[in-house]
Length: 91
Image 1 (cartoon, one colour):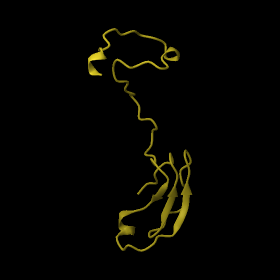
Image 2 (cartoon, rainbow, N blue to C red):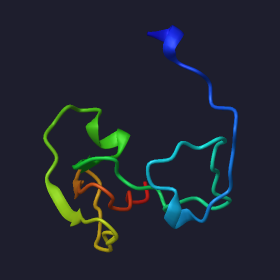
Image 3 (cartoon, one colour):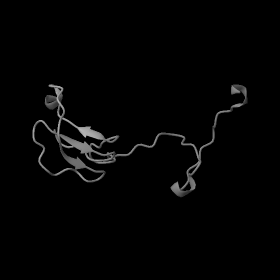
Image 4 (cartoon, rainbow, N blue to C red):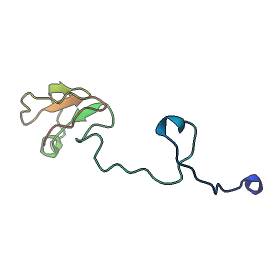
């Protein structure tokens, strides 16, 4: 199978709208962080290390959805339900 593969040697520059199905010749790097905040990679719970040391269940103090940070209070000994893409709460 490998004997039938030949490396690509030619490169061309195209408008982005014409690049569907093409292979990049070099990496694309953004000068900005996208998104511009720490976000959750999956649904779960935001907890503080100090709050989980005891191994006790934590009551849910609130919820954070994608693009909508949790602005309520986050008392010690609680957690925040956090959805994929949601900003991770401070702390």
